[in-house]
Amino acid sequence: MTIFEAYNDCKKQLQAAGIEDYVFEAKCIIRHITGYTNAQILTKYTQPLNEFQQNNMTAIIKQRLIRYPLQYIIGRWYFFGREYFVGPGVLIPRSDTETLIDVCLESVNKKPNSRVLDLCAGTGCIGLTIKGECPDAEVTLVEKYDEALSFTNKNASYNNLDVKIVKGDVLCTEGADGLYDLIVSNPPYITDADMKTLQPEVKFEPATALEGGDDGLVFYRHITKEYKKHLAAGGVMAFEVGINEAEAVADIIRENGFINVSTRKDYSDIDRVVFGTAI
Image 1 (cartoon, helix red, strand yellow):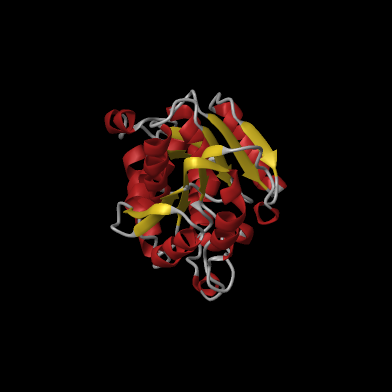
Image 2: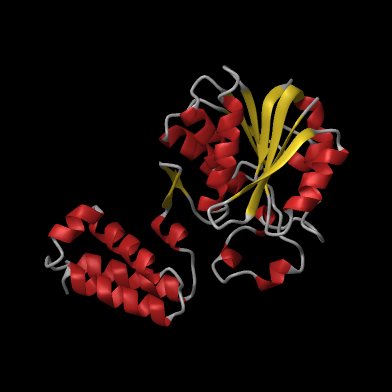
């Protein structure tokens, strides 16, 4: 079986299984099993796969057919130009979150040596991206769960980024030390009702990173109310939010005395980020 034949076979099986991004995923799988870049694949598409590569592809497809996340299978995923280790126990970085990064960078770039607090850090992709893009920022990442925390530490080391990583429970207002210029979070925000209708892949991700209570707003209420005391005057609090949650989260921020409360749409034209300024 050549690389080209393997790609077509992989694509057909994923499509038959109802996987929406079957073309993209087939390309990812071929890159993973061959170790080639897209450009190399184009020049080597008639090259046969060896037995190990064929067996590897077969095993990966079997996992995808039960809708086990491709990101977990590969073990690494790119976010904002950097590679992050991912696996069971940690939320997979998504392109939607890059909108939150844009808002954070706008804030941090206005003030040299900004102090940044990333709550519910998971893989660390938010806080680590901010540190990578703004090396003079002092970034602290807070994560409660040991499995996720292992990825936070591993990704900081892998990307050679000097940040402070704290084990702490956000709902107990842990992890903050002094005042910050930016507090950012992509907290659990899926409602109890929506937890029952998740895509098959998402069900493999940790429920602790997804469940936001009956209305999905538990973390927003607590973080806004309890962590605002850790924001310097003029500091920004920024959240990623779920679909149709932006208005409710904006109200929570306003009710807690923030000004200049705004929303920002993601690449799918969904209100994905809510942020405001402390006074």
